[in-house]
Length: 86
Image (cartoon, rainbow, N blue to C red; front, top):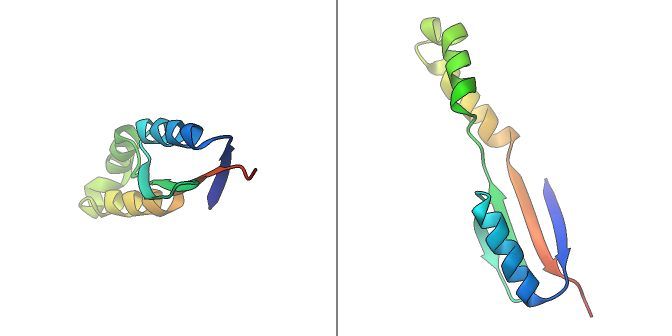
């Protein structure tokens, strides 16, 4: 799902892109009036430890792989930053 954030000027666009990149987003494309960023998550270390404790001993770590894939596609976040039209 893509969220849209509107900014006032191209300078604000650059600031917003820098802000999202500092939060872990990757720049997919950038133009003069818009930019698209995305972030994927593979789950935290604590969650992976819990999955391993409860399921890893009998699944030989496949439960962790399944959890990482689930998180990668479930928590996919995309943001489009656009300069408002005049």
